[in-house]
Image (cartoon, rainbow, N blue to C red; front, top):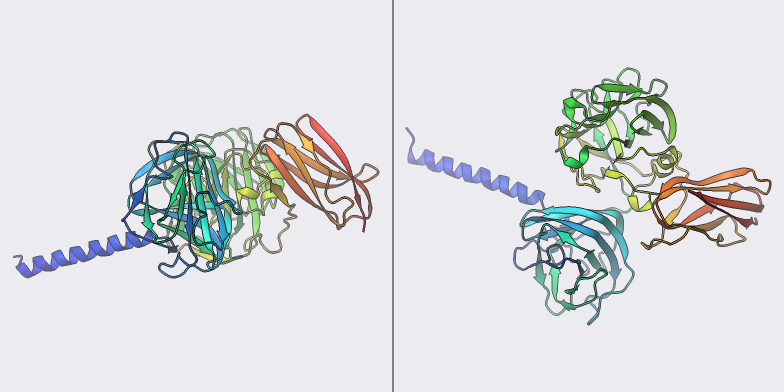
Length: 522
């Protein structure tokens, strides 16, 4: 027989459980540092607007205002969070986020803020989905150095939206202009007005120079892995590349890096348990790199490419094995997994895991393996997913975000990995304007000792090669041998290993070829 006291106790217990569950969910949705977490005040700009041509908004977050639950420290902003007041999804054209720091505490009167801004996020087309009264996280392409003693300007612009989008919460600040906005559309949008409202927002701040790698602690235990729910974008591409930095913890079982499909094995990159040979599996067909081994407990860059006819394996940027294979990747709706296949496990560390819908070349793999962010890649065409694994399991490209199972943890590690052969060439992408013609400019400075800059432009996506030759025509250095997106680039050439003299640099892209002379004086 149930007594009144037992019913009351069960009701109270049920309420307590629900309260704890809801509290846990709410806490899990909070940014590491934020300004406001309130439902008072809401606005449709810039993620939910009827203006077909887009919207532009700037907000000014004052010094130290990211102070919940504790003040944000100095470091690198790696994510920006916006508190959403309505649920919805929007597909945005040319979504761009810029950040800048300044000493001002109120916006300039009657104008956009025009100080120095850095583009930290850009997508030609991206879909964002929001849940009401939670924080939406956007992982930045390029970390932004943050000084909490200064104001932070956040500039968000999109050039068109479909599917409605969502609104964000905002708080009115007394006595200060905190928001600039447009109402007329157009891209770029003209300034229309300003007010004292500040978006409820937050940031993830990583200590300057701090980097992490995912750790699978126990070799042979397949309950430690990252589970990622199926999304349509995970399948349907015949060509692909999977690459990551790995440091396997042993060879008790096969060390899986990435698997899509679980038991169906739509595609999988792993390392054989007994031979330490890397292998690629597409459905029922396994291709093993029998002449290539991955040494346990040693950081190694491992990559596999499939172009529809051939599987190629690369170790530290050098192709070590290839074999004809015609089994296409599968198209199941099963989940994706980092660190587990079906029954086989993973172990050790995984860092900078990338999935591409193109078969990357050796030059592209080698020259970009030590570059962390797409903004510094020679080309990001075909990049479908990128897990930095910097203390989270967020995919910064397609939101293939995962949940850790078992005892998945993180190790701190420098990046680029200490002691590896990176041989990085400085490449800077200048602006977003597409040039009309191919061009190769005179290096500057010239004469030089020992570093100079070489600027070139390409009007369309294509493979780019820049090589250095001595006075006798002998090749002495390869600066670039990668696919590039259309644009203008500046490449840094370090000639510290060369002797004084006249050298030639030659650009080849498609049918275009041009050579110029430079002088090294030591």
